[in-house]
Length: 318
Image 1 (spheres, one colour):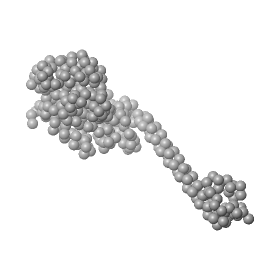
Image 2 (image 1 turned 45 degrees about the horizontal axis):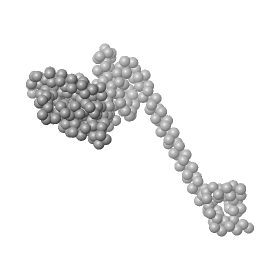
Image 3 (image 1 turned 90 degrees about the horizontal axis):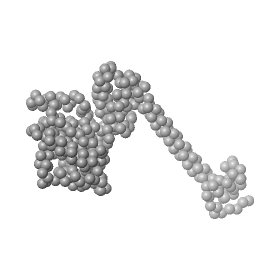
Image 4 (image 1 turned 60 degrees about the vertical axis):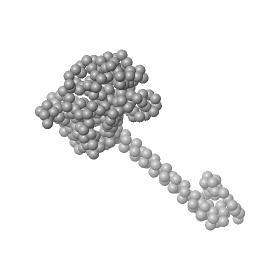
């Protein structure tokens, strides 16, 4: 391995990338390393905040052309004119032997006109398309592109062009075993940037973080870590988490208590019905004697018979 490649690998592993600990993430890391040196177009799919841009930069760094630029384009803000202006600008800079990486962030947000123009550019025979071969294409999406295609919101031909290989990034709640390493990484990073001591979290705080649902994924965890460093007090920084956990516990207990009450009432009604039917049968449907056996008033028994829907088949009061 060359000295330059070693430097690139060190940069990739020491700055903003944390290796996954679970089998799914280890397989994903290995696949990213395998395809990094190919020119295949890559589609990264995952919820918002799962680290798609970090993964794109890692693949670029491991490609062997890590010193070449990675150019990011925010697809939601592009018009057809600005899209082509960006591409022409990239082509103008792609004169060296190094392959640049063009990162289409949020590719599902491309307007229909942008999709049409990009597809036309990528199709064979386009004068500048051959030069574009010096540019590596990585796209990211927060939604299933297959569903976008089936719904008619994304051109099928363009999907095939950008989807040479699809890597699906799991949500943080699906890889909670990585939370301790990610948290340590972010705490150390922001402590260094803000020139503060790296905070030490209690076991209770760590358990609270592990039990959180993380709708914002790694980005949310990063924000929490930064807040802890800035405030210098994990308990204060995680006040919202504790409140949410308490509300969740109360809701769970309330639902549990409610379900127990419902079950108890249902069991009580079943038992009451069985006792009434047994007394009526024993007394041959003499309701006055049945009321005496049940130790309730005659009027109460008549009400309960009506309430439980008992049909009198033989009634003869003595």
